[in-house]
Length: 204
Image (cartoon, rainbow, N blue to C red; front, side, top):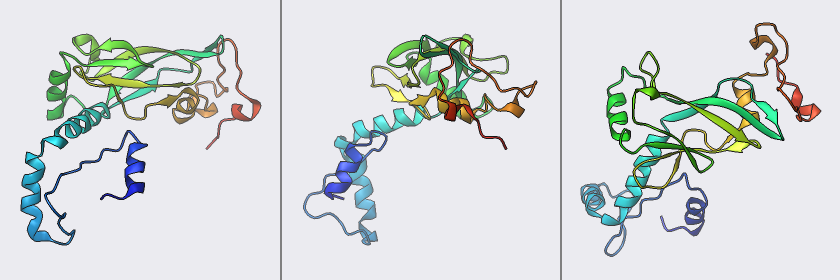
């Protein structure tokens, strides 16, 4: 639990969270099942882990959201310009849906590359079927982050963030020949600076 390499690994990966409980004296052995009730009580009463647990909860909530491009973005001035939607993996029919958005309705806010772009406040965030759906614009060299801010806490990455426009295009099949109505390879509007070896999309 106090291994130096383990500590360094956790410090270098912000997505990992470590809960350190303070023990008086020696820590219980891992095979000491008799100590489990006491350890559970100690965790519940240890104020030093409360902040970390709150941060874990915020990160878990942010991970419920994901991003999809609407269509092939354009290339303008060396940047990718286009639109996409921030969506939620929880559906309106699930009990957690209303609880989640009641919690986020007063202070939930999405940011792209450190700039606020959308608030979670009213019915405009939901489509006709009640699904969460916020349209946003992107203007980036390639990589960009989509984060969720809850209350006055730090920004938390949504699922998959940070993103790469190139990878999203491939993952969503936006350049797939047989995924388009005319079976023609889709081109960028304006400047197209994909290297030749990158222009070929895998066909299945």
